[in-house]
Length: 299
Length: 316
Image (cartoon, rainbow over all chains, first blue to last red; front, side, top):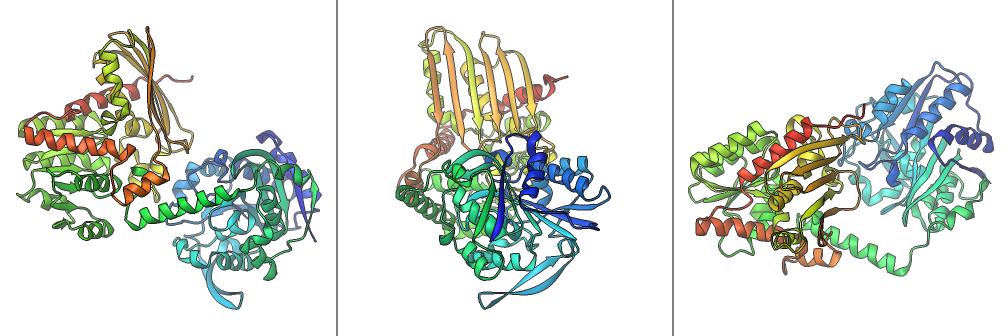
């Protein structure tokens, strides 16, 4: 059974202490002799942390301070993300405040789509998939995954597992969408984070809520199972989580430490049948307008 | 009519042209293969990858220009020199220098040039009659708001949006023309003072939100609130007169109305303003009337924005 910690962090000034306590609750210690560290926040959209869609750069800055204090001041730290068809790393990292933060913290910003990489074959559910493994992640002594906890239209829950998929250097990520669960699990088998530290301060579930929470675990499957409970979904019905558990990425059974998980779960009402129908209708409309070559919102 | 640029706005004009009997889109110019394919599929006779070739086509009386802002001056001047009437998307240009060039070339060529300001054909335009009719008394204060996600809604975000050299600026020059044009139309173009404060929430080299305060010589004090930071779209006008308050707002299209639009059953709320706008442009050409809002109006709006950029309230 994996350990998942939940610690309150109501404001940015509390982030560092909350991270320290989170790591202590799961018994995580930075390994000796650390040199190269890769940190992967969620920078997937032009929507900042306040929308519940991307990781707050202040949490990453607090994590960097913690690592420097606990491990060493002389570290080669890289904040990593890749390009997608919808947005370029260069623009989104500026927009979300990572460029500014990386200058203040004196850490590198690495676009994994421009990083040197090796092609690697990964087996998921008896099928083989080809992925590129970027050197910055391959050579890292410590890989820290810092996702945002949120609902995702395709993967249902976007948290630790989905955020690692963002390390895929291939910008045309939509080509993996027909097998998204397999692609996410494959990436997680290829590059397993040593630590997952979740920004659940502002969370996009059914509506946006301020939970003021930092969640940590070394197991991405356990953390995603906990995330599903918090945002009102059933982890057992989420394919990416069950597939990841079957493929040995982690354990769906977990023990929560710190704050009571159930008290946060009550903040997000479960989806009603009407909600489900509304989501399906919206998807159908967007798909139809896209097929017709139109941009629905411009009308 | 020829369509120069078949992105989101170009397609809106194209679809609305199908509902207007007095206009036919006979040619499209766009550098995107997908856009050209869209035009061919929808039966457009001529599809060009260069708008200069479209402007050489003698069968074309007028053009709708829906290009990135840095191409407005070049394309509008060429269109005027080719004797084509012009419907030009906002803003008129990146700066007043380019704007003046467009207006002078249009006047010299004797062609009609109209700004693409759909709000002038929406519910927000109806307030004008209330002001002019004296129903509100004297309007003391006015609030004009246009806040949404702006270019960050349209994925992928085109590089030119993120380069102020190409776009002319940020949210103020993008959304400001809509609201400033309405205010000048309501209260006249005599302005006593303009001040602004710009915001840079997203660390980009342009403002992503702005508040402008405009004091009109007839007495009204107006604020213009524009921004690219909000997930919810808000386009609204609120006026406070000595007799009463008036307000109007444009709301997002609902799913069902989007379906109707997709199926081309009928134009609905948001699209209706674009439909009326195009209809007005075409009718003005046929009846040989000057369209309103004109390119000259667009230049006045750009001049207000230019002063707002200069007269910033500094925090220090």
